[in-house]
Image (cartoon, rainbow, N blue to C red; front, side, top):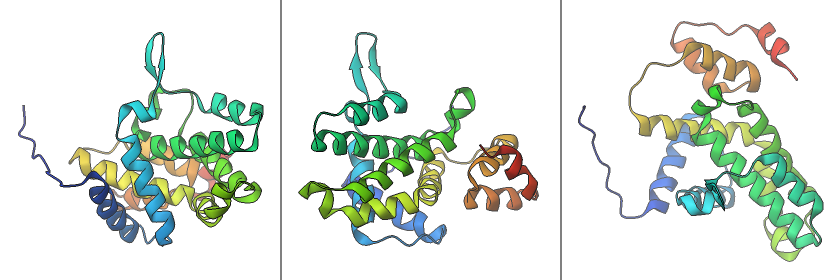
Length: 205
């Protein structure tokens, strides 16, 4: 069993703030400070399993995104709809950012989470009516526009925490082909693989 260094931090929120700032600079991703604060809050909140998962008779489970979208469509009030869309966006961002390696064994992939999350935030930005949603309309708009780039930045944070490992080239190439991830493209080139533009056409939905 190899030795593992334990990083001690005084504040989980501060850790995520510094990690996001570093990843965003590396990915050349500019974020408004309010958007950065929002993302840090999402990461801090979902670092607690009880905030991310829902209790079911079978134990804690992650609610499928399609059911979250149904919650928003079936909402009886505007406030309920906005809360459902916000959770859909938040969960999509967190899962795509930190659990993307696990998608290789799933029926849905990272592009599905990017599409669902981006559209949820976009709907919030376009249709914000409640006072709470209107105050952060510009944040939701930026999250919708830069969702894929934010996922790249969170992938950077997640990979830094995992330590050195061999990249699954096929998986990395598939991620680039599905999402156009600039980070995946750069890592492929660093490993001596040149992405082919036509591959993105074949993977397009």
